Image 1 (cartoon, rainbow over the protein chains, first blue to last red):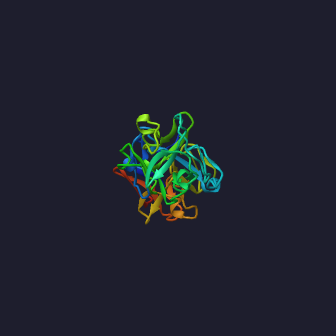
Image 2 (tube, chains in turn cyan, green):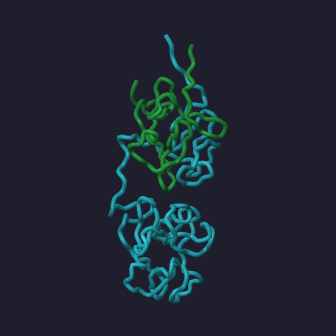
Image 3 (cartoon, rainbow over the protein chains, first blue to last red):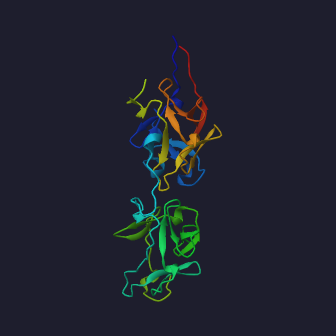
Length: 187
Length: 86
């Protein structure tokens, strides 16, 4: 009679959203960046989202959301165009001047229309469908613009009823700069 | 043996995806039978499918069935299953 017994460095348990080994280390996305081709490694558990995984059996994998479905994580309907209206007194719309995001009086141009793209998980412009909301300065700045879609940190925003549009990574909310309710003011 | 292995929290011989809970919900993919990286889901890509082997108790690739998820330092690789004889 024979039997096989793998060594500890090949043994993983699926435990409360982590894949953990007997030394308590868990699978994590190296560099904590949710990007294509990012390496997956192992470190001590700290409960970061980058260490959390769901085992989904192939026969139970949910279908991809389609047009009109709601992405509950992002709080937005897929490919359903919307305006973004400031709650300042003028109720101006978020618009584009070039690629820069500003507030302007409603004008029925497509530059004031936006939609949530399920594939990239970004908010895209109806005017330029290959471009998405983007925090300028490599996600570190304060100005908003549209840029070529890459789904990096500065392009992922959710709709949060209380705080408005919030960046998924750093929690900063979309804001009219200086709170100035003026035509063409930056967002 | 089939069904859930309670100790490991995984069903035996039932292919699964390892899905990140980060916002893009990318999955782990075994690339070139070696590295494990994050990738956009492609349901038909067996390199993105793994299964729990009830014999060795390891997580194996559904594409390269002689390879298991292996820790080496801080990195993960797919390597040949280290089975021992008793």
